[in-house]
Length: 167
Image 1 (cartoon, rainbow, N blue to C red):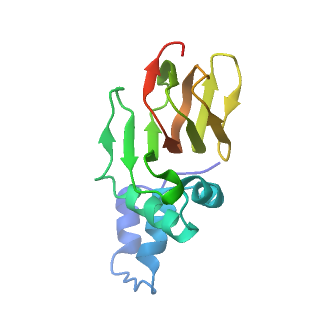
Image 2: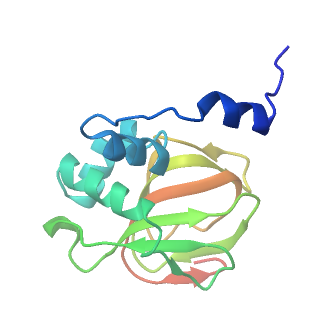
Image 3: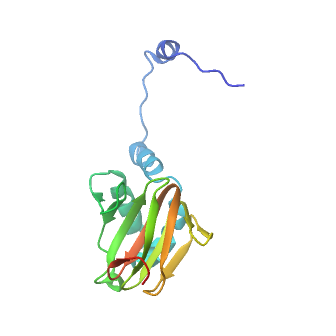
């Protein structure tokens, strides 16, 4: 059984304690706080975005600052756009953050949609699920709708427009 230590007791315990951070501590803390669990998929995202893994890590870090995310037409769904490598020319490249419980409506794409799930799980209307590490490629013939189980973040490369309903 765990017991909580009252805040006033904690303040007394740590008063006068001076911590000298080691080199790189701030960067390590930011990396671990920004995108817990994304690192294992860095290679898959690098291949998807046509970037090296170091650049992917830089983009993950940049996304953690939060100031470059933009709203989408879907309530609560946010997008983080970036420039991918030459193989992604003309595509929309970046991260998409979908809030827990959000039901993404039935849609298809006029081109291809490729993504790697970084966190959360997408439960599709046909019952299948896609979760962390899954890499998916849909062409313009695939119509799908899903619900976000937990907050979902995907790294994506999308060519063409999103088309509501059946393609």
